Length: 209
Image (cartoon, rainbow, N blue to C red):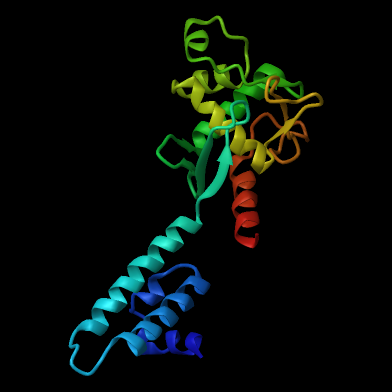
């Protein structure tokens, strides 16, 4: 019945219908009706609108929070949260990895390693002074010029998304991966990562999950 209410023409411009997640939308409306029914008396003019605003603000916060994914760095286990967007990966508190950043980093790894394994190797000083072995840290720095240790979070997310695959003997002290050539569109002799198709698949899987 609540869904029927929200589908009425008069409700189309309400703040409830501005909530993207349908289930959150219904919970917000239900909470507003509950609070109005139990907390108001006939003398409380304007209280209904105030309660509705409070419920909507809380619902929006809940919805925003629901888009964050819990994760942790793979070597030190430092917790962080990330969000997938149309344009890349947003890390709570920064940094943001754009699709261009991701594609260029993976392409550099493809150039350096092909189908072979590569390490994290992301020491800020070693990468910048040229003494670090090739790996994700060097590839990211060469591709973007950004801080090499950022790849501790990037690697964790890309592993979750299936772009990179842990190798045999993988451990927190010995991190190494190979590129998933099929998912990245590199298994048919291609010379460029099909980042758009890969990302569309990632976003579709998240929506369905």
